[in-house]
Image (cartoon, rainbow, N blue to C red; front, top):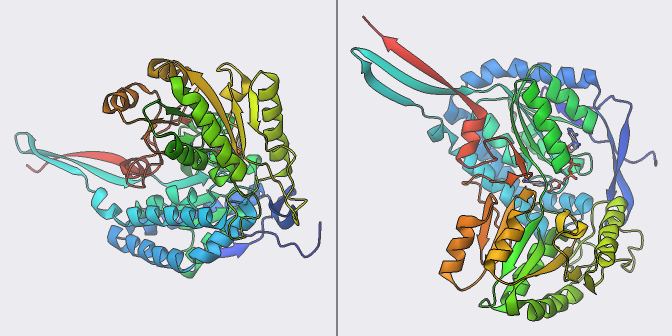
Length: 486
Ligand code: NAD
């Protein structure tokens, strides 16, 4: 480790401080393979200090009028807009996605801040007069307490903003445990929050890994836990937080299917499917990892998508014209290549092979080229595993019923999309697909911030999802008051 590599900082009680744990890890620029930062994990005493500051902030923040709290968010929106380019470059540097994708991510973060600015209206309760003679009843919403979010690497600013603005708008102090693989974007977000002068302890950032998350989840002052990451981690966080009697929402991994019917326009769908499968280097929970081609759509679709995969420009996401950046780590390259190997040995045809690629001038970068496999068997490892890399597996089905039963037999339930010109087929799909986010003639059915992000199955553990009207439900607790004034 080079002595000049900076360690990322925690932000606790309105001040920057160094984490003091013994364990540490490196952060790479995945396009160059160079180490660009170091993350020292937070110790138990760092966590205690952070939670003490957050708890101390609760009484004052809760009493701050909701409209006043929203003013910080309006200012945050302005700062995020002013600093979009810096944030996007920071994301590209530590995550690898191409700059246009990083700018899009910042825009999605801002959407959530805008949505949270409207929280004061959504905090209203209910009132009923004369539930008995001279007796009235009301429901009011109060903050739930200190809220924790644990974030994944793949959307380092958008996902923290699925939670932070809503939690604070509802009157809660908020603690973020950023991903240890993309911590610098979180640090930059907190530099903006620091400039806004929130009361100390209202927003905090702590760095670390699994053990840090567990210390935070177990801490008695944490009342609500929002998690986004892989399914095994989501399941574990859900069980741990729920066993301690905490409110929890845990979004997990996915294996999303796209379905093309023979009546759809093959070339148009191939373009959309390429974006869904290879955009963000396939590192998104809404990536279309499988295409189920129905009837005669199969061969022409396989040909069209292979053409697009071969022509996708691979390289450093900072460079103009690059369409496909690297994956997050060298281990990820290995994992994705192993899954392609496995697909081939399970009988699929590797039509376009992204294994073993190298980008000139970036020979140490973590690259996998766009990959297409055809005739993937439904019960194979590739069909059932989240690849999290730029890989599309094509399966064949005789009709929409068979395509739906392939989707519904999967363990995940994050997203499924149909491409068709038939309203009847679209309605059947919307009605019968057992997933929480459905797309019709779109390849990434990402809910806007005004709707909840509705994963099902092994893609979600909990009840209330991220953003939309679920956010206010999650970040407040209801109190019912029955009143008589004799
Ligand atoms: P990950 O599960 O490795 O880590 C996510 C976060 O959880 C990190 O901050 C990590 O330190 C922490 N963590 C890991 N294991 C933990 C455990 N057992 N207990 C507590 N904390 C733990 O995920 P990742 O590789 O950073 O992100 C990719 C995964 O996230 C993919 O599976 C992707 O589908 C999923 N994801 C899901 C959504 C969604 O909305 N459903 C959105 C984005 C990403």
